[in-house]
Image (cartoon, rainbow, N blue to C red; front, top):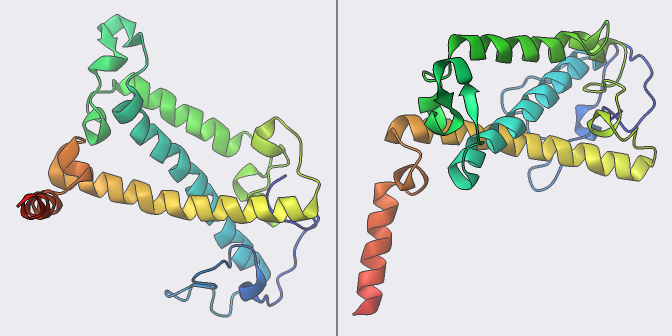
Length: 206
């Protein structure tokens, strides 16, 4: 699995030095301005780490899903044949929320629930019996566990870093989309930045 560089042994509830855990990386090192980890025990930290990994994984998928139709276009075919609704008819970004049929949202929620609850008897609280985020399914659920300890630690640190970046990215994109009301140029390049760029270009041209 991909949850911890150590063996998947049940953890105790004693004190833990969180500054030595995975995810403490340059340039900020250990960073917990809200104090979530103050006086936390091992099981409490595993619960928080499991939540961080789940949110990070979801944010990575959401970020790709948000950018994909804007940059590479929509899927071919119909989202809802009965309603004659094509994928290309769905707006990009937040505009898609109101256009996806209710049946589509029900399918999405059922699929998410199946993933959340269907990976094992303790899949929603895997951190109680296994390393946080480890569902014992191997790399992407297809390629078996990473057995090299050094490679596993690098992979886990990369997953945490990429998940944190994705959480910031999807939050920023949703806010920009909501503020500007578009997924076009104005979302990615605010008007003030465009004006500054035009002034600099005009000044350089003279």
